[in-house]
Figure 1 (cartoon, rainbow, N blue to C red):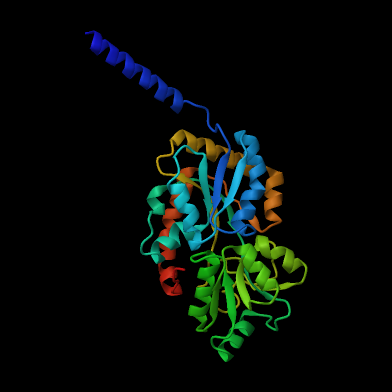
Figure 2 (figure 1 turned 30 degrees about the horizontal axis):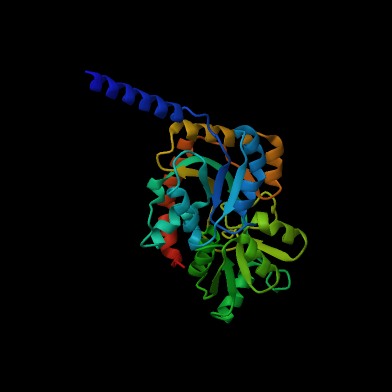
Length: 323
């Protein structure tokens, strides 16, 4: 009886300890957020813009950790293997979550299973841009030049499977041109080479491109979305410019490792939505070509499921190859 009673007391003590750990207030330390690309791209800029408000609402600092390479897979795998306690997260665009599982045959994780949606953050506007000293003034000019010089024009993309990678592949596929694609580890390094004239064109997200467009160092020819960008109202969509069926959208959001407790997901979601409710933040995002997209974790999960179905034929037609 003594032995049995001792066992029961030990079990109760263990349960109390586990319960106490589970009930520990979240967050209890800084939150590390992985970005799958080099600093200076749209996802990185969006995160750094919203981080001060997240710090305020969560009571802990947000630590941005840029881990470029393999189209964002390096960062994603770090998060997948992290403890599911909400202190290691990822912010991602559709490439890592939707494109990479299709083009990487030996991906060691499944984003649809191993990463749990927390909240969408922003919709990102983008544009087809060329250095200002290039002669092309329209999509038709660019396509005509590429047809005259097959395999001579080059363009950059910020990681395999990124939305600008898909857009470049779609342009080649739908217009029948042959160009040279150059991979980068993020929108920042890509922009440096584009402004310097080492690239002929790129589909760039607006946050890194806007300062150079405003300074006259780049020229926008079209936007790849379904409608014109708010900050570039005079620039046509690619479809309006003559290439029908062209639409590439870009939404980024937060994700956590599988098995992260629902209460933690809810706390993080509330913090993101509270930040997006700020009029000052909305204005700051808008100036960079970003639009806040509040919603529940279930909303984000539903969005990703629908996007997977929409993007599969686009990915196949774009002939995207892994690094």
